[in-house]
Amino acid sequence: MFNEPVKIILRRFRDRSLESGLLIIAVALGIGAFSAGLSLIMNTIKFSNEIMSSPEYKELVVSTRSNANEMDVPVKEKLVNETAVLTSEDLEAANLAPDVEWAYVQNHSMLMLISADSSSNNFGPPGGMGAPQGGMGGPQGGGPDNGQAPPDGMDNNQDEQGGPGGPDFHRMSEEEIAEAKADADIILSDLERVSGFEVTPQFFNSWNIEAAEGSLFSTSDLRGTDNIIVLGSEFAKLLAGDDMKVSDLLGKKLLARGGYQTIVGILNPVSEEYDSKFFKPYREDNGGMRGLRRGFMDTRLRFAVEDPEQLDSTETQLQNWFTSQFGDAQIVISNPRAEAEQLVARNTGIGILILFLSAAGFFIALVNVSNILMSRVLRMKKNVGILMALGASRKDIRNLFLSESLLLAVSGGIAGVILAVPLSNYMETAAGITSGSWLFIAAGAIIAGVLTFVFGLIPARQFMKIDPAIAMRSVS
Image (cartoon, rainbow, N blue to C red; front, side, top):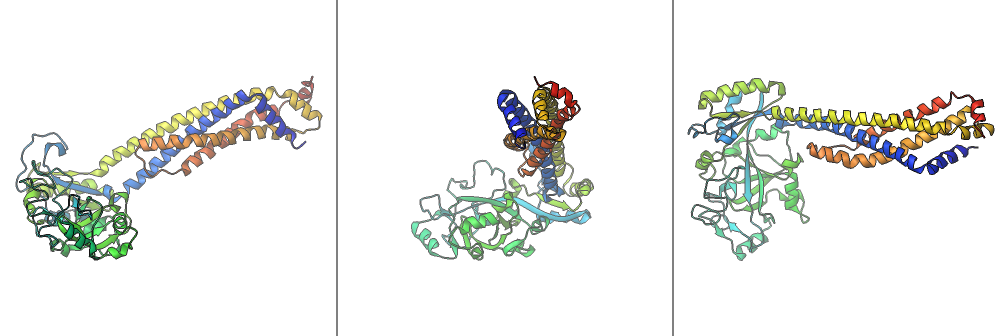
């Protein structure tokens, strides 16, 4: 008697395989869509909270109105006044904005590295392997790179006369490469170039970045002449390779076209963006480069606040200060948080809409499944009559239909999860979400499975109201 309900359910699924298969597919589609929709909105909220809590969206970025493409509003393009050149001295504007917690410079930079392969484009520092002598390479390593194009007719590896690496650079010989390779204090990287940042010390405070090994640089290093460098965690691992510990990099000299870069610190893991980068002290005049900074290397100042609600008032205070210093319409202050909030609002709205549509589709599927199960139940009067004739109670009959509903919910739920995973990944990728959690898919599948089970009980409850005598008379 105990196995009889199971046999009946299995026989029903086998005899009506097409109908049963369509039921499972309908449940799977409903559960998959609902789970993916729930996962999308929950991961959207989670990701939005993460990015809005980032220091990047608690700061204002100040730059010169250097060209028409960077303007917030269209205006007539004109040359920027000579006075409109931002330097670290302009960070003193923070003194007039009481809500500013940290003020710093963060400019893009690039190191052109020298590898152990003498056949590559190895143009060494001025004077051979000696200390850097200034010129185009300077401490920047192969010329400046702030993420902007150099002046027309010149690139990072070519001076005005067309010579590679600048007029004082020369191609390193095999002997020089071998000499550097044999020196345990010199590191020759397999990389040709690596990107990083020139920063002032408060950058590390604003992003709560600490050194895992060695130390960070201080304000006094901004006025020094030594080429020092701090490595991101992933960049340090890449340089160390399998032959040495990351901590062994401290004090070693990374050879670049601008000269030796002494490694003084290695950072704790921060983010994917920063872990693969290097950090150098920002200096106003690196090897006679101030003219180039005026020409195309637009230094950008960043002012970070603790409370994002104070960004608007701080922007007004900073705008007044820079207007008094440089004149009207010479300085642009951008608020990355405002743009991020618009993006978050858009993604959240899309997520809610998708969840609503998927939930509506899932509800319609549940109603249809319930109706089909009701018709299946009515066709089972004969089977129920036989079971009652054999002594089955109402509880046994109820368990029969509960088993069918549970089997449908479980099988549909498993198939729904399989469907939801790629669907959810696709939607989250399209929305730019990079830190989605599969736990939300599992939670959605559990909720949808429970609802499927509940809707499957409705036909069973209706059948429980049938008089046993009527069910017995249905037996022919």
